[in-house]
Amino acid sequence: MLETFLPSILGRLKKTAASPPKAAGIANPGVRIVDGKIVPHYAFQVDIVDQCNLACRDCNHISPIAKNRFTNPETLHRDFSILAKVYQPQLVQLLGGEPLLHPDIVTVIKAVRASGISDRVMVVSNGLLLPRMRDEFWENLDDLEISIYPDSNLDQKLIENFQAKATEHEVRLEVYYYKEFRRGFSIPGTQNQALVERIYRSCKAVHVWGCHSLYEGYIYKCPQSTFIPRMLGLAKEKHTRDGLELRDAPDFRDELYAFLTSPEPLQACRNCLATAGSMRPHTQVRPRDWLAEHDGPLESMVDYQELRRIEAEMHIQKPDHIKELLESRSA
Image (cartoon, rainbow, N blue to C red; front, side, top):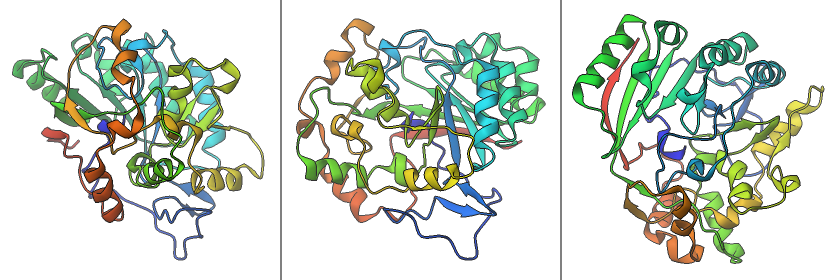
């Protein structure tokens, strides 16, 4: 989810290259090669379930209309073990949907860690199922981010309980409150190539936050390029059109680096507002009404003032102003 990316990453150890290699496309210093491996901006993401226990109008992982799917821990371990040979993020974020719906989430966490991709694993959750989580979940977790919405029904007592669990098990906890979101999708999209290129080049998910993700054996620059073909009802063979198939091969690192730094917009960009969509209040919708909420020309959904602001400040790392940090506790 674009809105879940952490703004507060100061103080974490980062490797630096003495002479970073030149990116294949857009100047993107957040993606570099260090000690033979690709080091991204910050984290790597994987949706371990597609479905959710909420139906947020502006969910940018299309969870309200997604079919039930649970990532196989063994498959995830295999894929991450291959990726770990060429790619090294600071941590791995387990997303959804709602990741706590996964019936074997502890095994998923263990599989990620055992792959060697990173020694830090984060779960990003709406928190509604946290009271059901046993100590084994907390014991295997490094970071937890909770997203709270006006209709979440998570009271202060529950949040205090989460804080106590995090402290007990030395889990870094951050709690964010969202009351509004930017529009993310346009089903009809646009044929305005110049606008598509502007939106892509100003996309914080790709160029600032670094929301690289894994989905069923393919690497994507952002989760939205994974889900837009499904939202549009495209044939299954087109679902991976914007992805790069994971390969255990000597030349894969260079292929992946070229893919991640390419200057070319993705096909999904024609239907995506990236981080420049117009703002509107958060609300829940009926799943059958979700698609209608995104039916309109892309041009009418762009916040052009925000687009110009991003273009002018692209090199500046700034926190999201759509979310409010309520709680931050370091392990």
